Amino acid sequence: MKEFALANARWFVLRFLLDQRCFSERWHQVTEETAVKHVSREFGDCDRKAAGRGLSQLVAQGLVCVKKKHYGTHVWLNHTRLDEVKRMLLAPP
Image (cartoon, rainbow, N blue to C red; front, top):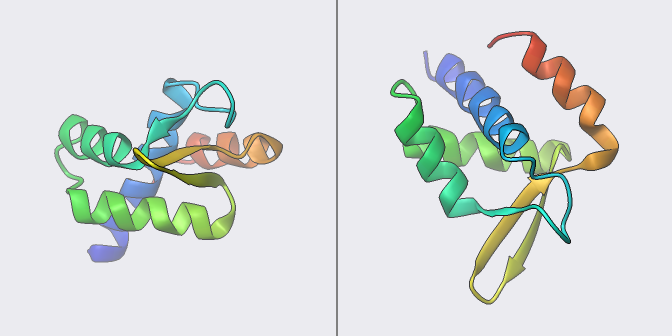
């Protein structure tokens, strides 16, 4: 069950970043905290811990980029791997 929740969390995080058009470090990005809060609030079956773990797995896979700034950690989709992200979103969790 936990693996299913984690797969859902990864899918919801990718969908949120794609919906928000978070494609580049320079122009479109959101803070990690905002992404996790939104995903856990928007989709009831995904809690904050699962969303945070899902986001960290996506960072480890290289699908999501991360940069620490003095006012928070910012995340955005890796624009070189958008085709892979879209393929993952077309296959529901």
